[in-house]
Image (cartoon, rainbow, N blue to C red; front, side, top):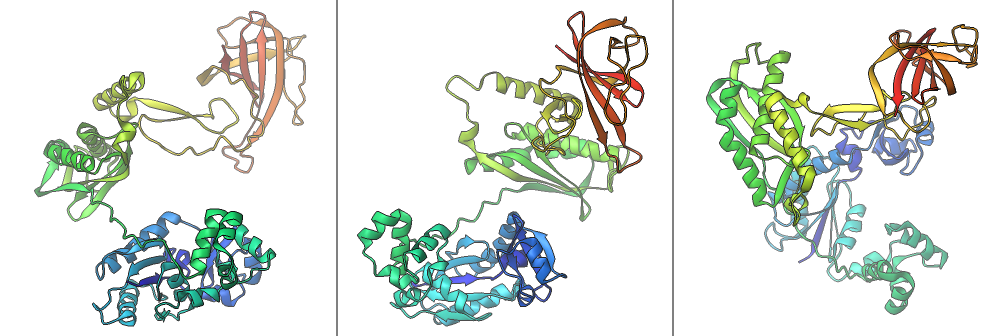
Length: 512
């Protein structure tokens, strides 16, 4: 059977919802990944830097690439094609291949027309098809076709067709550049080289390209395996009035959700729970688990979500944990899954980590998700700013990445004890005057005495370091502040982190 390739040009632009009549481009790493036909008419080309593209077309609309959105949108195309013919093999978003049914639609041209018409019905206007003996030749045939048309390479003619292509079509840019420097300009010239010499000089990658240049495509068109339908849910008629009734009624559904995941050798590490009231989804939240979800853990998350919605007064829930239109349906939607083997116990058990997870989960089940907090390090200048707290089991991205530069950050080592609320402190010079910091970062007097709180006695300074001035949020008058931090060691050997905010001293942390 011959191979048919369906190609949707400029797929990143199509997936982003940008019309072809508007100059638009999708960026990846600051360079143009794809652009619309209107942008190409203005001189925008793939590989251009952002500034160069905007210089060519000042009204150019730019969006960042979203690979997940591209894949999800192309899944709709694959599902539509699978309704017409089985065995669709995705190559990448915007490009797929399939075996041509020899007589089902009347021939190769008729098959391509039927498939192109189905893709156009989805709103993808520019779709092109190519037919050849292999996927490589069929892909480049599709690139020669007109919009909503097909380019057919005769049987046995793939070698002649591919031989006319330049070596620039090779995905390996380094190999293409090397071939050009060796004087090999076309795939036909490359095909005339000895297979043994090609393998010796270019390895397996060059050997595969050499076979493609000769019209031989050893890569099979393997049909995709559609992902299993893992959503589990229940509808209630009449609708339930309270959250406890919903949790009790969904015990079997939660168990079925876990069992069908196990049937596919999977466990869920992130699940989205959707709650419908009437015909409207009033609650939708994604929950994550440090290990994996079992049925009791799913029910706990459902109970927390319903309780949180009731207390927050979201549309639907009332203050007494009752729903105005009732709970009409609940769905468990696994969003992140992994193989069961990745979470299996070792020969000697999972050890203390598993015991900690079970203990934390039990406390959460009794007292709620906020009862157990996990701490992560994040970016910041002060020690308190560098701590990010979140409920146990959640994986919330930090707002301030630690790898970014933070001017004014105190040097290592970090203090061991950070006070929840800074304590009033005092620092004085040799003559008892208050120590301050000038706008230029100079100390008004050498710190000689200090006390870490109003209840502590004064003591002599054995050593000190600083200041580390910080001018934070100077652009926002409401939250702007100018502070300076000092490391101070007393004669008793204890070390402290003191901060001067304006003309007031505070003790921020202690070194142990």
